[in-house]
Length: 78
Image 1 (cartoon, rainbow, N blue to C red):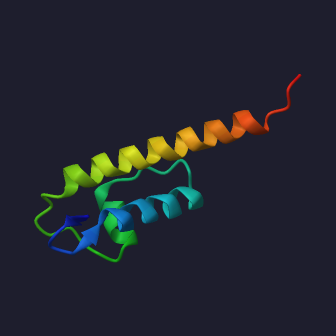
Image 2 (cartoon, one colour; image 1 turned 135 degrees about the vertical axis):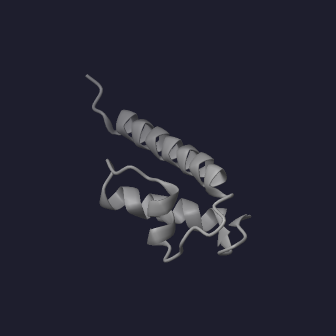
């Protein structure tokens, strides 16, 4: 789905760059500006920023849930 019509940025691109950015630094703060910079884009009208924030938050939550699930399944039973 296209999230930013000005730059033609899709939800898949945003999710992919969020994964990449968090793999590089899991503690960094992800803002629409950081995400667009990583995509080589620049906010224009910025009306998409609320959607970028929601999509980013959902992706981060999903990645955190996956990490917790993985840690629980790999933890030794004792």
